[in-house]
Image 1: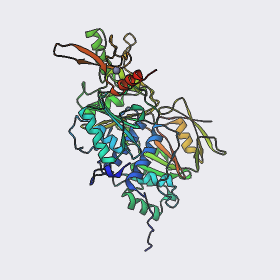
Image 2: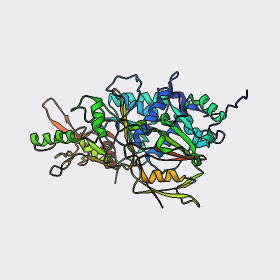
Image 3: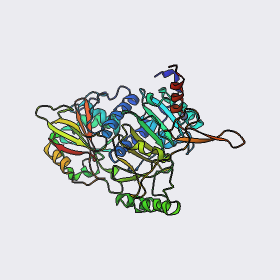
Image 4: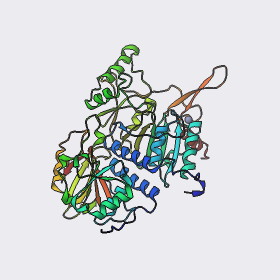
Length: 286
Length: 201
Ligand SMILES: [Zn+2]
């Protein structure tokens, strides 16, 4: 750490110690009850909701001098959101930052899980807009708490089955609900369902922060995470006929991009670090 | 009036608290893993790991219950001074219970939370004689399974009380209820949260 780089007059990682302690106690309960949403008394962050204030509060409570931080938004390290959050923590902690997944000890993300498999010891912090997977059917928190307590998840299956009746397949493609440790139905945040299998038995610790609703939840490493499905309609991830127009990958999550005003389009990796590294290894002289 | 000597807490309150928390997060999310925890010294009979845990987690919004041997003027004054925590004699309202292995309170008196709010349950901090991932002579050898554990993990605990062993193997409170237990020995710590299935070898 280089203390010179830390902005003066601010607490380490912005939050005061009492707020960090409260979030830390919530995090310890969250990992002890995988998939369960722990309420916490969140504080305002100097960024608007929708910018990942829940994820930022979790990161602020977790981050230490020895961490190396990566921040991604839709898989990219260079969007305004990712750049701002990374600069915020760099200026208020002095920690090292990186764009390389394997170098990071702490990764804050919105909407993606990196393509490169995460390792033991890494912590992935998700920014969550709506933490309650049952909210679409039940607006009352008292009722959704009761449903979780009773494992009353029939409505979730009905919702998915309505998809099948209407479209012939499960149309839910983002924030696809999962069952954690065989007990709690959990919203994985708006990641593509392509990423859901990466959550299952990951060696990394996964933490989720919702700023507006002030909820924290977690998946410890090596924990069963199953995407909800039906015997006759098993869970499937997105696939593409195309490969990445830049690196040629056929195994990554692809974004469709418009190339010109004639409407020509291409598909490229949403994970910029993954794509760049594949390109670099292809350019290397043999 | 006797004056009570104040002991030093963390050297660097911000950094030390963060490091202790990261170790606790590690052991709570990977049960049976043993982490070094010595960011503070001992406080009387409280080992460094126990005192460090208190310094990192307690404040004026938390209530702690201390077992008899820890409930001295010096310990309570120091904990109040450094953290501002409330000491309670009512087990059922304690957020944290701190005890030596041979002074375990009645576990069925501890706060459990509810099915809607299982996070409101008590965290039980137990100071034991020794912890190791290798079989220690005279120790209780545990095999742990569950979230945070690939396959299974061995944990060897010297002076693990029989009532705690029976609690862990019987799990009388069905999940999501249950006690989350942190074991502290000298300058190391591990945890056995409510999700861990425990077998005694
Ligand atoms: Zn690519």
